[in-house]
Image 1 (cartoon, helix red, strand yellow):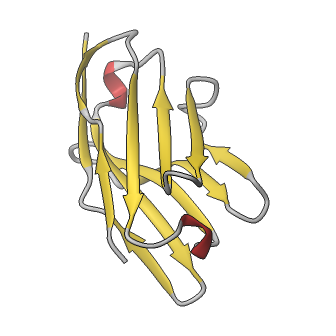
Image 2 (cartoon, rainbow, N blue to C red):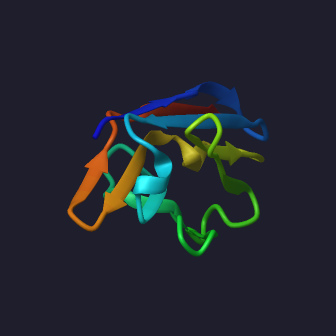
Length: 115
Protein backbone atom coordinates (compact mmCIF):
# COMPACT_ATOMS: atom_id res chain seq x y z
CA UNK A 1 0.00 0.00 0.00
CA UNK A 2 1.27 3.44 -0.92
CA UNK A 3 -0.03 6.71 0.44
CA UNK A 4 0.67 9.92 -1.42
CA UNK A 5 0.17 13.06 0.63
CA UNK A 6 0.14 16.52 -0.87
CA UNK A 7 -0.95 20.06 -0.13
CA UNK A 8 1.71 21.19 2.30
CA UNK A 9 3.42 24.51 1.99
CA UNK A 10 4.12 27.84 3.60
CA UNK A 11 1.22 29.78 5.08
CA UNK A 12 0.88 32.72 7.43
CA UNK A 13 -0.56 32.31 10.89
CA UNK A 14 -4.32 32.43 10.76
CA UNK A 15 -4.41 30.98 7.27
CA UNK A 16 -5.70 27.67 5.93
CA UNK A 17 -4.39 24.69 4.02
CA UNK A 18 -5.92 21.43 2.85
CA UNK A 19 -3.86 18.30 2.81
CA UNK A 20 -4.79 15.43 0.53
CA UNK A 21 -3.91 11.75 0.70
CA UNK A 22 -4.33 9.32 -2.17
CA UNK A 23 -3.93 5.64 -1.24
CA UNK A 24 -2.99 3.05 -3.83
CA UNK A 25 -6.08 1.00 -3.00
CA UNK A 26 -9.64 1.77 -2.02
CA UNK A 27 -10.03 3.76 1.16
CA UNK A 28 -12.80 1.33 2.08
CA UNK A 29 -10.19 -1.42 2.42
CA UNK A 30 -8.92 0.27 5.56
CA UNK A 31 -10.28 0.17 9.08
CA UNK A 32 -8.74 3.45 10.11
CA UNK A 33 -7.25 6.38 8.27
CA UNK A 34 -5.66 9.40 9.77
CA UNK A 35 -3.15 12.19 9.86
CA UNK A 36 -0.17 12.49 12.15
CA UNK A 37 2.52 15.10 12.39
CA UNK A 38 6.06 15.43 13.61
CA UNK A 39 7.63 18.75 14.45
CA UNK A 40 11.42 19.19 14.61
CA UNK A 41 12.79 17.65 17.79
CA UNK A 42 9.42 16.24 18.82
CA UNK A 43 7.72 12.88 18.67
CA UNK A 44 5.13 12.07 16.07
CA UNK A 45 1.64 12.89 17.32
CA UNK A 46 -1.88 12.11 16.25
CA UNK A 47 -3.75 14.91 14.52
CA UNK A 48 -6.91 13.21 13.29
CA UNK A 49 -7.87 9.55 13.32
CA UNK A 50 -10.95 8.41 11.44
CA UNK A 51 -12.79 5.13 11.81
CA UNK A 52 -13.86 4.08 8.36
CA UNK A 53 -16.57 1.85 9.81
CA UNK A 54 -17.81 4.27 12.45
CA UNK A 55 -17.51 7.36 10.30
CA UNK A 56 -16.24 9.36 13.25
CA UNK A 57 -12.99 11.22 13.81
CA UNK A 58 -10.92 11.86 16.89
CA UNK A 59 -8.75 14.92 16.96
CA UNK A 60 -5.69 15.86 18.91
CA UNK A 61 -6.42 18.40 21.63
CA UNK A 62 -4.26 21.04 20.00
CA UNK A 63 -6.23 20.97 16.73
CA UNK A 64 -9.80 20.45 17.89
CA UNK A 65 -12.12 23.01 16.36
CA UNK A 66 -9.54 24.04 13.75
CA UNK A 67 -8.86 20.89 11.71
CA UNK A 68 -11.36 18.66 9.95
CA UNK A 69 -10.87 15.21 8.48
CA UNK A 70 -12.94 14.19 5.48
CA UNK A 71 -13.17 11.48 2.86
CA UNK A 72 -14.26 11.34 -0.76
CA UNK A 73 -15.02 7.80 -1.80
CA UNK A 74 -15.65 8.71 -5.42
CA UNK A 75 -12.17 10.23 -5.72
CA UNK A 76 -10.64 7.72 -3.32
CA UNK A 77 -9.09 10.51 -1.29
CA UNK A 78 -8.92 11.64 2.31
CA UNK A 79 -8.29 15.20 3.39
CA UNK A 80 -7.27 17.29 6.32
CA UNK A 81 -8.69 20.81 6.23
CA UNK A 82 -6.58 23.01 8.48
CA UNK A 83 -7.84 26.42 9.52
CA UNK A 84 -6.63 29.15 11.86
CA UNK A 85 -3.15 27.77 11.56
CA UNK A 86 -0.60 28.61 14.21
CA UNK A 87 3.21 28.57 14.09
CA UNK A 88 3.14 25.55 16.41
CA UNK A 89 1.32 23.61 13.68
CA UNK A 90 4.56 23.62 11.71
CA UNK A 91 5.51 19.99 11.10
CA UNK A 92 5.75 17.22 8.57
CA UNK A 93 2.28 15.74 8.19
CA UNK A 94 1.87 12.06 7.47
CA UNK A 95 -1.08 10.17 6.08
CA UNK A 96 -1.72 6.84 7.79
CA UNK A 97 -3.88 3.87 6.89
CA UNK A 98 -4.51 0.76 8.93
CA UNK A 99 -5.82 -2.65 8.02
CA UNK A 100 -6.03 -5.72 10.18
CA UNK A 101 -2.84 -6.97 8.57
CA UNK A 102 -0.90 -3.76 8.13
CA UNK A 103 -0.16 -0.21 9.18
CA UNK A 104 0.96 2.10 6.39
CA UNK A 105 2.60 5.52 6.21
CA UNK A 106 3.09 7.99 3.41
CA UNK A 107 6.31 10.01 2.97
CA UNK A 108 4.87 13.15 4.55
CA UNK A 109 4.25 16.69 3.44
CA UNK A 110 5.77 19.74 5.12
CA UNK A 111 3.56 22.47 6.54
CA UNK A 112 5.25 25.66 7.65
CA UNK A 113 3.28 28.36 9.43
CA UNK A 114 4.96 31.72 9.71
CA UNK A 115 4.15 34.20 12.46
